[in-house]
Image (cartoon, rainbow, N blue to C red):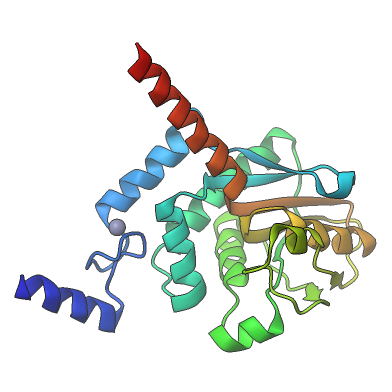
Length: 237
Ligand SMILES: [Zn+2]
């Protein structure tokens, strides 16, 4: 009992905990790795998140995971505690998904970028988690990673109501001549952030913008709902 408490304390102090379950572990624990691979290998694993904001430009977002508890904890660990041990797993899975989709459509991607967080948040946390993810994905795909977007509205999306979130954050972009860009974010909920980012990229001359996110909240909700239904059906038999 005392030993466990001591180990947890040491783990907490030195950050040697699994970002998925907070168990003392030098990196992501075996159990969480298994949970993640279940999430990607299952038939109903998320592929796309459809955004439909204000009826305009219905865009598909490539996603790697549903926003399950373990994925959520890992993303929050990167975001708030700068714990990066799960980046290889999350970013690696997203890089695989982007590779599959762009290969299918024979798309030549010019570079990777990200939807930057607000300046206030970046100063508070000392890093931009979307940038960390984008840089990892770019390395995996052997593509350049470029910082081209700037957030014009400094309202963070976290903690806002659905209605507030639907007003897309505004971005501006450096000039992009006729290139295909992949823009990355951590979680897609309403799709407002990625939509704002891709609008700015198109305005600045991109010929194709591919949106990608590590996790989708909508897909997770729908997949868990279907699990509940399947369970209910089983219990009736
Ligand atoms: Zn774990």
